[in-house]
Length: 300
Image: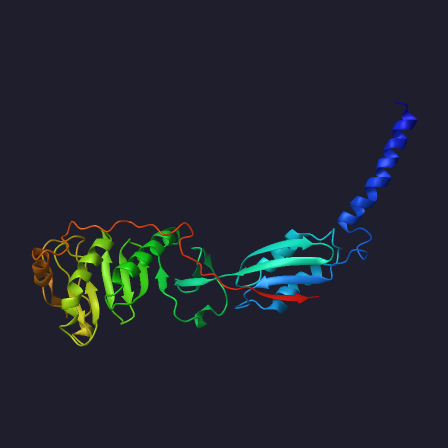
């Protein structure tokens, strides 16, 4: 092929490709294929249509072919309470967005929240949310705390006890906070088994007082200690026992010794110290997300 014919072919290809590239990049003709509609599917519980429109609209002026959907998606995803965004173009003039809001499952520490996928996020005004369980612990143990919280909910079902919070201390000890104000110390070793033994005794124990316990210490091998509300509350829960300490706790420091009651229960056929609760993992999504209808608005 001669040099002149090669040059001619290059010029011809350039003349064909340049308009296509220009349109796709928004260099010209963007007004011939404008985006005139923005369709959004969302729940609008914490994110408004005006917020979404406000960040997406300035990015739609490049024309249907030249719109950068990644930029639109990222701009909307940066809004508070937005978990993720799906975006696509629909011929001839529409951009469709599906906006998934964060679904708060629990509080985590002082400021953050846990969503229903088991992820952490932080938003302004979270203090106003009511009815969320209070969870805390090291961030790298979040999965363990969620799993133990789910297990506690299953175990206390039907007992009359309501779990309001779970804490994993820096030393690895577990603590349960009940809606009644009761604090239950489980320690580090086999917390689920210790909780199960306490729940086996709880129906008889609950009938002995008209008020809920203020404090329950399960960190003993063969018993536990209880301090009832109003009983020597100023003396505190007493010294921390060694993990798995033998023998029953002794009365004192404002606590009632219940080791004998527990021992009698075990001899009568209750769950013994060797009892275990299987580690029932949460579903793959960790926390099930309820289906919510999505509202739609057309606009632009």
